[in-house]
Length: 244
Image 1: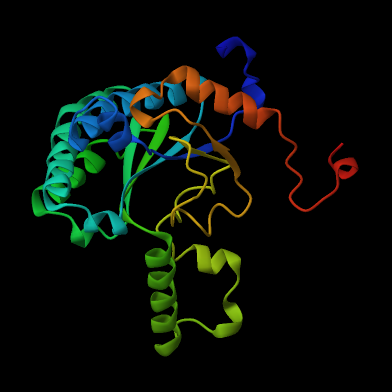
Image 2: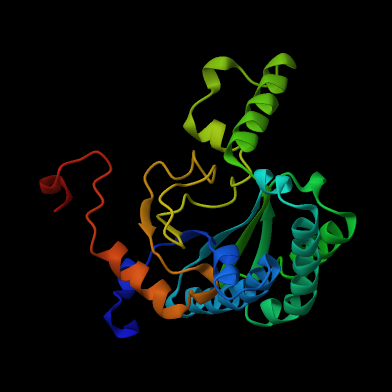
């Protein structure tokens, strides 16, 4: 399948909603954390797959602000899994030219989690092969509200004028200001919604939904999504004849 992919039409930025860990575990009579643990394998596969075909940015929706409402033992287990995974994989990411970024309301994270993330982002800050962005304690409504607050403060302090605000200025206050907008969004596990994820940034993203649960998602599933993307006509408001 890899040989079918047009290397000249690779999306520069792919965003993924990693859904289905809990259902995958339930189908095997295991607890939800078992599914999250196996989901880490899929993360490693997809990171490798993106690096191999030349994708430059990969954003993974790892934990939403709404996920804090889940059972306490699941949240605690997820945070412990995150810390253990970052600690284990940071050196490998660095060796393979992967830069790690984190976006979201990080003040809500446990201190040991923030410390591990800070160490990993600092370790990999000079890498350029692939940017992996973890969306943690993230939601678009939080992000947009936070951006509006920052802009209002700038206006209040006469550091910004209302007439200066345009799409580019607004985007500069978002947590994704360092990255291009995603061209392709993949959601696993059969749900057809975007769950408060990159709402502003996905205005023109192609959406791809698969019934595969995240712990079963592998490189071949990524390549299927890329091929589907490459067979779409992206018009951005134009008509087909204007593209050729």
